[in-house]
Image 1 (spheres, rainbow, N blue to C red):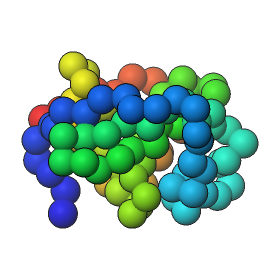
Image 2: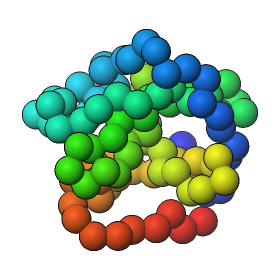
Image 3: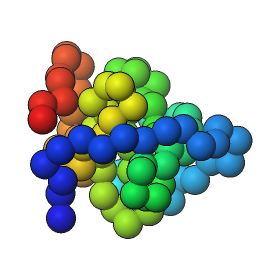
Image 4: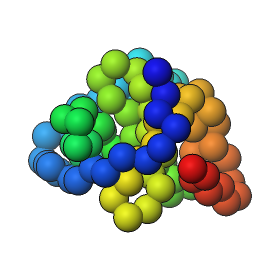
Length: 98
């Protein structure tokens, strides 16, 4: 179930990358991303942050295949994974609307 509101999260580690969430969502784009960090939401859910090398946009994915958009102020909102992937791969601006 997707949340309609943003939830707080914080970076918890930057040393141990996990590529499985990205490999599940976008196996043909693994070489296009850099793993940046792991964040933990207040609920305890962990997200892996992947930055696209060209667009500089982020995918935040959990290990269950869910995607989250970063909304600023250390807040994340669950969104459709395919929608977010398309936005990250495209040039141009987008905003996180609550």
